[in-house]
Length: 212
Image (cartoon, rainbow, N blue to C red; front, side, top):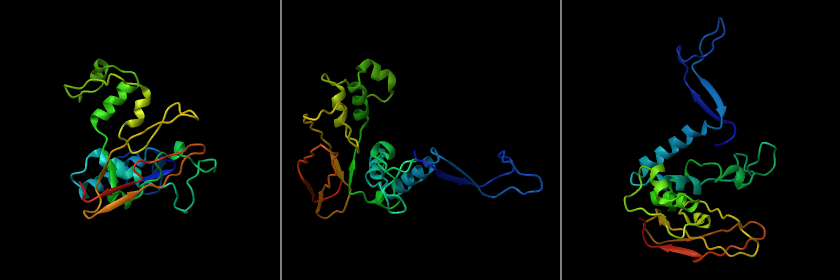
């Protein structure tokens, strides 16, 4: 979703377009809204899939999210409708880019079981989960120690922590897959932590000798 996203299509005589008397139907139409982002993102996802046919939907989603930018086209921070600097609560991962998702380096693979476990973590039992989803593996069972706190460890490209107190230590884990260059690659993180939060990465660097 976004604000003032533009989408266009060619007009036809039977699409219900309004044509003022004495005027011809325009060969070009344009509308604005939030759902107009759907064809843009779908087109980008299709392009990524054509370039990387073995990538899963979650890998493609990860590539789009982790390569998004928080800077607008004017090289300034994304702002809200009111003009204030936007936060992740406003823009999510940020504004998608059209080149970087093809070479994200690392991707987060989110599996069906991750999403099923999420339902368990927020309070549904195994029976209810199987009613909700028709793709539940036969052997699936909700983890016995399911709590809302465990949702933070779903292998998703973003991280959220619930009920985080000022003196609490929370461990969050992620598994990444290297889809970068075949030669030896080292990845390190740049942390921009919220005020009052100390973030420690273990390990501080990831080193790969091959891609998946």
